[in-house]
Amino acid sequence: MSDAPLKMSTNPRLAGRRIVVTGAASGIGRATARLFLEEGAKVVLVDRNAEALDAAFAGLGGITAPIDITNEDAVAHAINAAAEKAGGIDGVINAAGIMIVSATADTSPATWRQVIDVNLTGSFFVVRACLPWLQRSENPTIVNIASGAGLLPNAPGLVAYAASKGGVIAMTKALASDLAPHIRVNCVCPGMVDTPMADGFRTNVGNYALKRIADPVEIAGAMLFLTASDSSYITGATLAVDGGRTFH
Image (tube, rainbow, N blue to C red; front, top):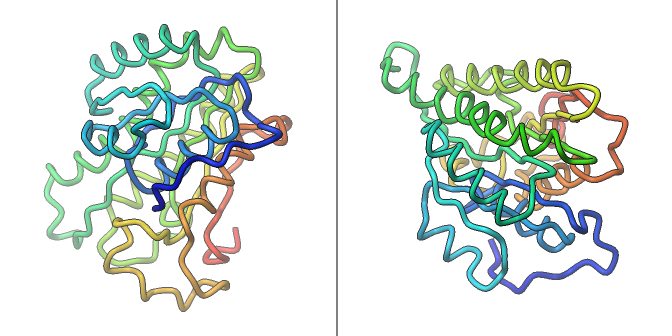
């Protein structure tokens, strides 16, 4: 991804909003955090890789919170500290995630737990930590990143990953019901995206209607839509941003 200076919007769609973005050091999380900064948000940048986080956002603003989202106590402490510094939290983007490719017979309990812990449980920990702050916000939003694999799990070696992302989709709908009517909760399901996670899958675009993989910025645009007031009457939605892979 480009390290070019931010292109600040002349009509910022997130002016004054304070947004937590996990997985902010790379990939979709990084693209989303940059876009949100350009759109006037104060962004809390969460990632377990402190060096990558600092390198990605040096001089660009934001509040860094280098934590492992699978550590519930660390998440709660860091989110509260960042929220105090930001003056509150108005939105959450759960973009942190991992993929481990492994056939079912070769997927150890440790591998299963690792994928579920990061992709599903970690997202829940972040929501729980942010919830008291979101409840004080006038227009709170949560957007979780799942995957096309959670909608149509037809790729080999992704049983743990697909299960974790299917869980994110179900969790999103349950949260939307549980936190209504004050907090809107939605989910984005990307297809293949031009990030290191796509290594080994980049040629598998034959069943994509658009016949290409996505730029992370294209997924960030969907996150912006579901966070901004444009989507004020949308909650509990699962938005496939996958080039027509699932036609969901």
